[in-house]
Amino acid sequence: MRVASLAIFLALSAHADITVPMDLVDDKGSVKSIGNIVVSESAYGLVFTPAIEGLPAGAHGFHMHENGSCAAKEQNGKMVPALAAGGHYDPRGTKRHGSPWGDGHLGDLPAMIITSDGKSNQPVLAPRLKMADLQGHTLMIHIGGDNHADHPATLGGGGARLACGVIPN
Image (tube, rainbow, N blue to C red; front, side, top):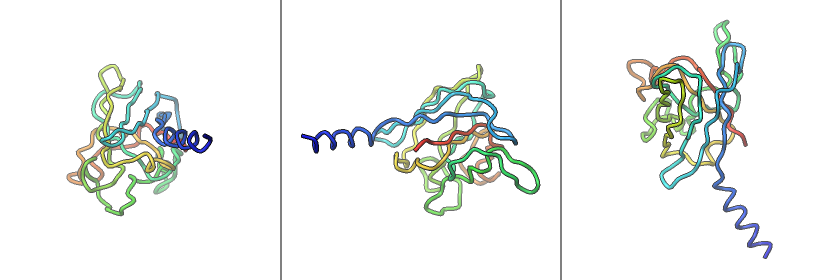
């Protein structure tokens, strides 16, 4: 009986949703909470459902980054918001930006759409990610859109890091 209960618990906990608190970031670190993103597993990949407010309207680059920190870090003598998060999650070493369904960085996600009232609740699907990929990483929202290519601008032209959240273990 105990073995069956443990097996059921482990099976259910393997599919539990993960809530990632998101904060605006600047060159001093986290500024303020803007909501959260709930990550859930589906038959088609991971679903990222935002409950975000207080961001500029429009399409924003959205990625999973390689490190589990949203701290500012120095680069070329200047503090950069959330630079401690590292680059886009790329465990296969592709070293190129791509679409969420392509063969570039595994952390390349569909754009985050912010409505005219500064909110986002539209889920996005990451078909190549699994829950096991999340541990030890961050979610990042960038200023500006993302064309999912390295041309004409590197990393999709998404711009500076605007909001960040450490994915809980």
